[in-house]
Length: 218
Image (cartoon, rainbow, N blue to C red):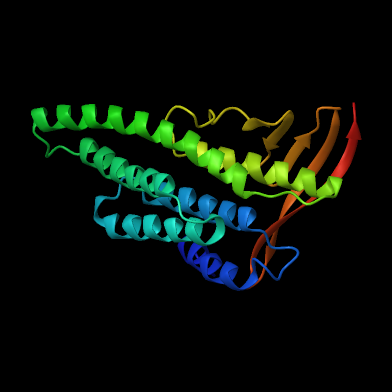
C-alpha cells in the first residue's frame, strides 16, 4: 500500500499526463489530495528529530505538486519552507539541549514565522481561487466551489491561528456559498439554501476529482 508521501509524488507525475485529457480528474482536487497527505504525514513525523530528511522530502514533494497542478508560486514555496522550518524549531524546543538564550531566540523567530505564514496563506488562497476554473453547468459551479473551499481549509491548516479548532467542523465561506468539511465528504450550501453533498473521486494512476449531488433545500 502506498503511503501518503508516495501518493503525493504519484499524483504529481500523473497530473502531467491527465490534466488536459481527463474529465474526472481536476488539478484542484489532485492538489487537495497532496495537501491532505502532506499534513497527515507531517503529523505522523511530529516530534521525531531524526526524521528531518523525510520532512524535507515531503516539503519538496508538495511544492512540486503545487507547481504542476496550479502553476509556480513563490508564496506557496515560501509557505512550505516556513512550515518545515517551524516544525524543526518546535522539535528543538521540546528537547533539553538548547541554551536558555537560544530557546528564547527561537520563540521570537516562531512568532515572526507564524505571522508570515498567515500572510502567505491569504495570498495562496487567492491564487488557488483564480486557478480553479468552473465549467458552465450548475453542477460544475458547485464542484468548483467545493474544491476551492476544501483547498482554503487545507491551506489554513498551515497556520497556527487560521486552522479550525479540532473540536469544530471546518467551515468556510466561498463567494456566498458555505463549504463544510465532514472528512468523508463535503457539504455545500448555496446562497438560496440548497444543499449539495460532494465526495472525492480517486482515479487510479491519474489523480483525484470531485462529484456533487443535491440533497435538497431548506
